[in-house]
Image (cartoon, rainbow, N blue to C red; front, side):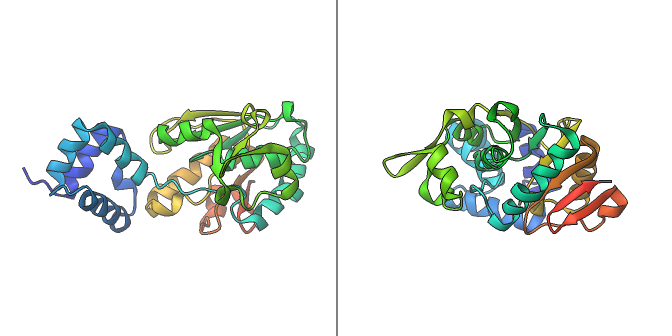
Length: 258
């Protein structure tokens, strides 16, 4: 047997359910090779053997390839559009009980930001966010709701005072915010998508996928949204064929299902 990258991808799919063929190969292979080198393992065959027997290395691997980089109110100008335009328009169109999905939510910064942004316009008991991620480790971090100061630097001052409590060098988000988010595991590449969504937020994740896979995911998001629903993507992303899929570009990073 040839223990090359194709072999490695097949083994990873069996072990984790993660299909590395859906990611841009040069970027992902470089990340994986660096991780293997860091662990002082020689070759893909031996590294796969380690992943099968060493829980720490397995969890490190999954966390590494799912690229968990997140912070509250990331790209604050876009969150201003969310607070001042997107959320009020959605409430006006669909009412107070919005179905919101934060996809690939990482450590929870994004869905918690959504709750705070929505709290400008709605009572907290009207807010419910469905937050999903492939990596169960980051979901556990999200459920704890404790963050370094750097992660919450962009949170508006009044919301920071209201919803965070400092504990040493870290900040704990309030239980009233945490209670509005339901976290669960979800694989964007193989699991069924929720339906009837009014707002989907998926930011700075799809840049790592191939163009073909990105297009498939955007089409699935379109199917998940109700007519008039919004998709909010990251500052480094765009939907080139949004008209073909059935999206209307509301602003730079907001797409509405036509």
